Image 1 (tube, protein in one colour):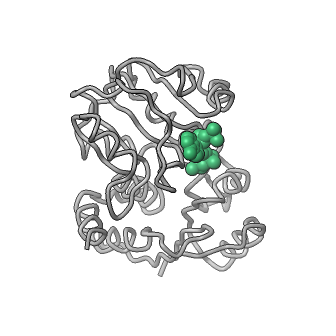
Image 2 (spheres, helix red, strand yellow; image 1 turned 120 degrees about the horizontal axis):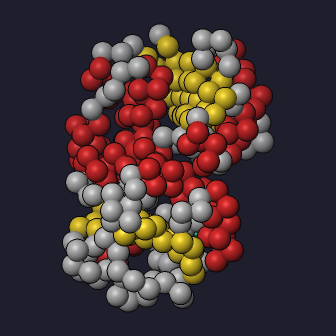
Length: 270
Ligand code: ATR
């Protein structure tokens, strides 16, 4: 049986094994997928060992996405630009390919699941960390009218324009305007906090997306709902979407993420 795993630290609560098991059932692919916690300092040696032991590919999550980027022999264009890798694959010649599927997962969720149009829309992104870097290329490919990127530390937002000159960086204090889609990519949500957002960003036509997810409503989505947003969504759909793209890279078969997302959502609520 072909073996795959998600590598992270911590990794205990990862939903990826459940998602990939569901994709395998759905597509009839024979594979095993597990979650493996690696010590933070030994990514390279451990991954080499696991490839030698016969693993076919890996998903990589916090804090190893940059290590995976440096580990790969070949990188896709989107992984190069993101400076991060969440999917590793051993190619036929033995070389390791690194890709990042997070952005494709987000675009899939926005367009295909939620029916939120990206093309020609005004988009605001909050945050300028690794998570945001990973989504920019696929989002920009959809040709939004503009992408404003607001961050607590302005210098970090400005740094992103070195690789993505199309975006307009600003601090939260400078942030003005009205947006069709607001995406929260700060890690503030993880601790239940909100970035200091000014009033007036959200109109009755604004759709708000939190890249984080949890059992209940996230702090950002609660704020968005109270501001009168047209619709709110959390990052569970993005998680399933990125998994589907990774699955296709490994197996050459495209799973249908919608049913798996419904199943996960129901599990999460209960
Ligand atoms: P990740 O890989 O999750 O993106 P990261 O690279 O550490 O993590 O980036 C975290 C992002 O969340 C940054 O944009 C950070 O802002 P700074 O660049 O100013 O550090 C943002 N962030 C974290 N906590 C925040 C908070 N309480 N309020 C606003 N922004 C926050």
